[in-house]
Image (cartoon, rainbow, N blue to C red):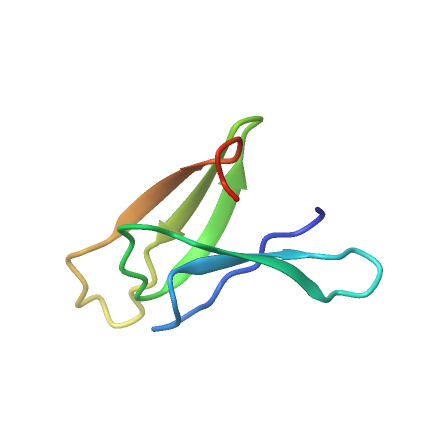
Length: 75
């Protein structure tokens, strides 16, 4: 796995595992209990991914969130 892109702006709450040479999606992981509105960033540690839902171009959102996903249990 090289990259974990995600849906942006009202897409499904999921991230994707991409194949490095082809760029094809090899896995889709749904973020359980997440309500994606505007995912912006992904950060990673050895055992966790952090996905921020903080897009707020018009400064009207009050429901900003950071989701933590354990990479050892993700299937």
